[in-house]
Length: 318
Image (cartoon, rainbow, N blue to C red; front, top):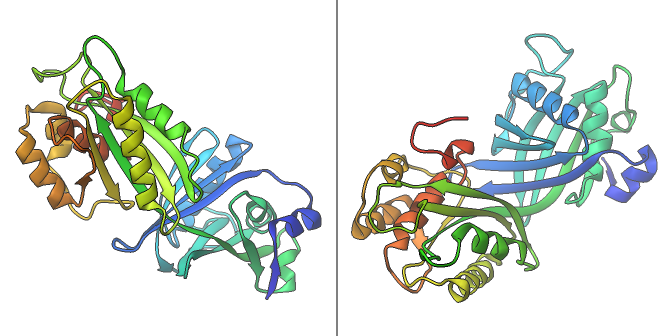
């Protein structure tokens, strides 16, 4: 086994193109979410297509610009990996393993895809060290096969839903939520993305558009409570409403389906029912008010990782 740091791989192969590598783990569902960013969109799209063809530990890949979000299962899974053809991928994620407060992802690549896993990904910000099984895996390019183990910090995913921070006269929930995320400087907490969630515009008690906001964070062990205290204080101190709701879910995926995924966009809901459903789904509220904003905050959490359709009325797609 040959172990190199990102700086050592950069010296050996020259500067490459990976800009981000981050792995979140959800032990209760046996899932991992991997975020990767490259300087070029084409390489991300090609990697995603090959990983899905090879299967292995990969479940799904979503590409937005130069960023890939990959959902994977924990453990080691046999991949269809080899020469590129209709049946076999040129790049594969073969396994995801948690070791203490670190995550080890195991990769295979052939030819140009081998350069990607052996020389490019190992240089990405977020990588701690890289382990090459043999000297041959350090020879890149041509028709060679490369295998590598990438070690990175363990993160968990935290989704926070926010609603009812404004009134008809002033304020905008999405602005306050985005300022909250962008001002977060807590060590071990990385802001991932924000989503606007269209709720039912027919509800009688609303401002105008009836839209909640969802914030997604990657959080290191032991830092979740610090993050939640920060978000609650920032949102409540900036809110101009007494109805503010803040909901939290810790995890990559829900273990259960919820009828409220549709109902928050189509029905007029009671606060008590929303609180009961939140408890059933493992969502908790951290706001101080206990008012109607919790309904929209729950909706924002449920839709916070569903894609662009979250921004539309129920059934609308781009």
